[in-house]
Image 1 (cartoon, rainbow, N blue to C red):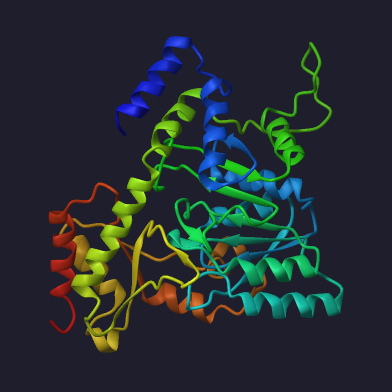
Image 2 (image 1 turned 135 degrees about the vertical axis):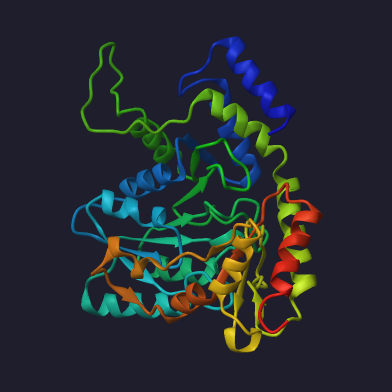
Length: 365
């Protein structure tokens, strides 16, 4: 947090605009559209809420199936279940760690032959890196399936010069406390369709009909962002480029110090775009390095340094037991060997040095 955020929050207090409506909300939506290059946006209480509304607006309902990236956080798939639908999890490719375009194309072709295409595809952009959107979007368009982009982790990244999250029918972003910019809690739903975003705003404010009394013709949600938090978001948005550079600097420092160690392989940057490096991630080959991912994590923990395994694939999660998985070996391997290192925008050289020192003394060293 900085002075910009404090000034916007103070303005909200002075004007007494505290509720989930107000000038900061409108301005945040407009400024966010300018930042990512999209026509319309609705500021919401979380990225999960944005994804839930996107699925509802895409017509997903009970009994439907929705294809979803497997290597991701559970919030990418939970809203599918909110709608009474069933997730089908698609494996990653090694080039980007994101959804495998060829695997998706094959699966959709097979489903088309069987006459059971999914209602939508949720494409996640993982750890600050865009998926290979063009072939995935082409496959979805071929079968008239709406593509919903979960760019919660990829604000500040690019794909062929554009922001991931702006290619599909809907895109979603998160401003949770751990994201590259934060409103403490919040999200954004974006689209080029003004009617869709207007409908999202309607549903996000309890679907209240335009009447002088409280009348509701359908059930909505309490999903709008407060004016105070939108003020924080406006301030954070002004330093997004600085946050991306800080994250990329973290990654470069780790890669320079550790990239030549046998058995350590950093998450690649796909040639089609620029990663924000929201998190600095690597995989560990235990045979070459001398110890496995878990031993490194515990060594860091012993020095009061938090690191995390990469996301456990959703097709392995107990909550989704019985759900279909298309492939899965790549995501499972990345989970088994992958580690996320400390990556905060305020990480100091001394702190990075501590991380590097512990890892250098692990394994065969």
